[in-house]
Length: 83
Image 1: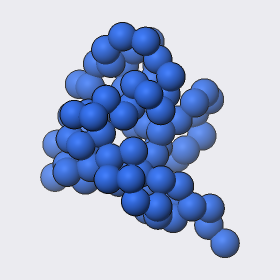
Image 2 (image 1 turned 120 degrees about the vertical axis):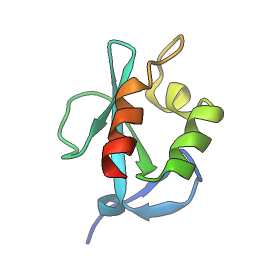
Image 3 (image 1 turned 90 degrees about the vertical axis):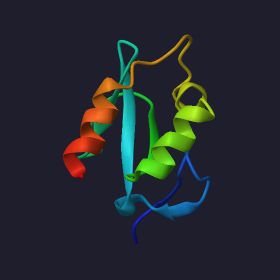
């Protein structure tokens, strides 16, 4: 059985396989599509609405326990590639 995680954007619980793990590397948000990168991760639905909600609420900063702003350029590129 697949573990359940909570989306930091919409706060709904979903299966881990339906969510995207995001990590912070040198204050850059990086999508961890294989969910194997080291360090603390935040889980979010791979949709524009959930990503925007998480960024607006500063949920990534809290979930990843980082201080200061995060660069979201890599996440934006991921969303654009996904379509």
